[in-house]
Image (cartoon, rainbow, N blue to C red; front, top):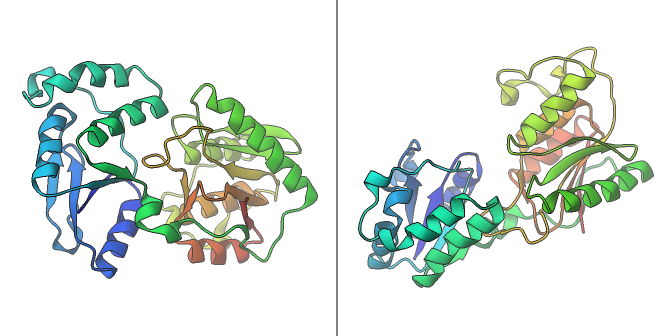
Length: 287
């Protein structure tokens, strides 16, 4: 039996639709402070970090042997008064996790489930088609300069890994225009847009037409490269892009988007390709 622990973003919905369509039974779980959305009349088991021990016991009681974490979840503050007896033995390692970088902390937390006989699985293991095939998915092809910028970006992301900073950067003519940090990919692209023309994002990016990129923004070029950091825990923290990413790349005036094959999820891939094709943008799944 699978437990699906959902956070923010489109990935949880994508997985839930797949589980529904394939008739796969599962338990839907969420952190207590998040808004619960029990799609398909699926009941929600809510839990807190302070009651993680009790949550793991519940998972075992209902026969869960696999757990998948999907969607963005911020680190929650701990309330010591809410720690229950079942969680108390985990507290020293939980406090240690809060002091670690993201990858080390995630691996430590996954270890709690593994020790209980519950195997963590990645979103791509639940739904393999979220990982696109290797190659250029669009009509537009990357230029030689784009390919050189991709090589440079991979070097930069590798250097970022040592500091556990981010999973993406924007490069043009060999220069890093921006790197991803804790605020995420959208913030990174916004910074490049601000540098090119200080306009805010549309309030509803998914509601704008592909042709509505603000007047006055030149086709400035450059590529967005997204890749997993060396040693990244992909079962719980695989990089992801989707149609919103494509729209923002159009607004910024990028030439294309490059993702690492087998280690970056593309949500609604067909929609992403159609949107890119209609705006002369390339999407390259780089092997």
